[in-house]
Length: 374
Image 1 (tube, helix red, strand yellow):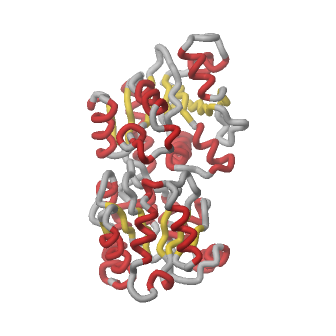
Image 2 (tube, rainbow, N blue to C red):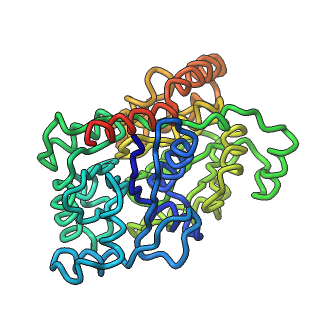
Image 3 (cartoon, rainbow, N blue to C red):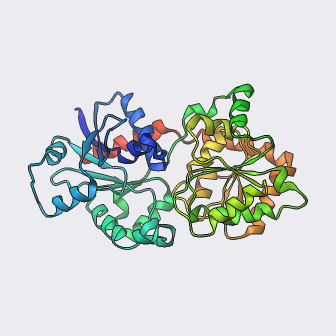
């Protein structure tokens, strides 16, 4: 039996249109790629709300706010949008833009519960009505897919969703991250970003929960001139600032302790990962922490937090730090510079850990959920 699946691709399209692909966008891209090659009778119908054009060849639907208001008020129930959702067997919402579907199974991917559990980590103007509405719409789902056991526990606690209707399916790391990039090619990327020294690498958008402020301060406290000899390269666009982080980044750049390269493409990211002396994700909260796996597959030393989902992903293959303790972060940075035996051991463990997480497995487990609902 062929399953016709409406698959949310809004954040993927927005990323491809120039905003930079975020974690949800990458999740969508990887799953769509896996589904295209899947032998088990899938017919994908991607959809995107409110984009001018769709690089992913999705059905372009109206702006979500307009769509939601009309759907809740049952205005024009015979619209083109309603016909689109009526023509599929199942709807998979991959983000917070959840369609109002009736008489169709709805699967919702929920990567974390930050808007509900940690509202201080989202912009002030989005902290109240949007999380409440998102929770109510998500509770309409027939099944929730999440990405870690930690997030599953958070969904049960903060959304009140039944445990038996939540499945944790870990994210994957693509085989391209294991492929060695020639030294000459990597050096060309370093030259582009004017990187001439060994460096630490931070990947991810700039926002308070990423804990960059404390990371930069911990790095600055390294003894002697180590902070300038081993600068931090920040590869991420500005999501939002708390009034301190960007100021601290600029100060670190001026003092040559930091290089901010902004958002980088996939290939450039891989070049940086294969060159860095240590990838650092000392975040305060992650639903998964995909850069951990990307670092492992690239044979980079990984420094990450001992909080939320990150130990679950890292296993025994990373240097774990207390993200609230600058001294803990500083000690890990210092070890990454000086303890060659530890670095060698963790890199080997990391490569092995990364192989446990594949997008093929993620796609197969997702399809199993579809089948249980059809």
